[in-house]
Length: 146
Image (cartoon, rainbow, N blue to C red; front, side):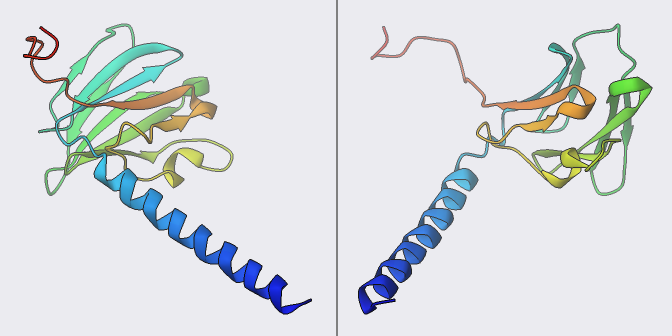
């Protein structure tokens, strides 16, 4: 390899590393601490968890959803999963994550904490998706939108 090849490889590596860190900073800056985590099971919205304080609202009474408070202001929600399995969602410090589930590679648990609308938690082996929606604020028109 020539000297120019080494320069090209090093330049591309530096650009890649910078792009990675910029994306991480951007994702962390889009956290919605006052948003809502909406839990979907088989395309039905079944639970809303308000990220501001951990309160919740059960949207579909047909499903067996349990709530428990843990130590250090943790809240645990047990929702249905595939084949009768249950998925446990944890809320803490304006974030949610899946802590227990049954799937081949534990994809749901590996995704970790989320409070950003840009990073939903998908648990497809259990037909579960957790989407974060930012607080829309008041619905009153402002000077620009009239």
